[in-house]
Image (cartoon, rainbow, N blue to C red):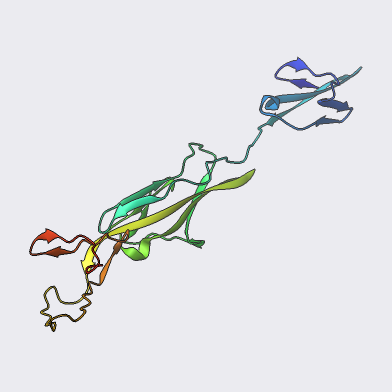
Length: 195
């Protein structure tokens, strides 16, 4: 038996069992053109076999959360450049299909989330697969939403002198907004009377 024109000997890695060649724990360097040559007195016969060593995709599995502002576009990219793999995308474990809102590149290694909204905050996964196996990268995504005060923006409250009053300001937003109270345009400091 020959590999790339060189005769193979029994080495523990290559075991020549007459009509079979066993390659123990195939490695990248074992790829190549193998030739089996049979000879006897009347003649010779030859057979070539091309061996390709396939390795499963290997990607970074988890990234820092990806943040995007509401109404903006978010782009996620699989962190692997390997022409042998096919890509698939999931959102919270469910396969993603393209729509006006979700686009996937021709090679399928990029996902474009158009006009992000709070319901798009999710765990997205890029799955890379080839004949040897698969791997995935996970992207936790957060859609940041500007603060919004719920209810009317102005309200008048009457309080009886020396009575306690509780003012509420219901706010929504991602991440949770910090609240600052002002009195006549000046920041209120927390005191015994004001909390």
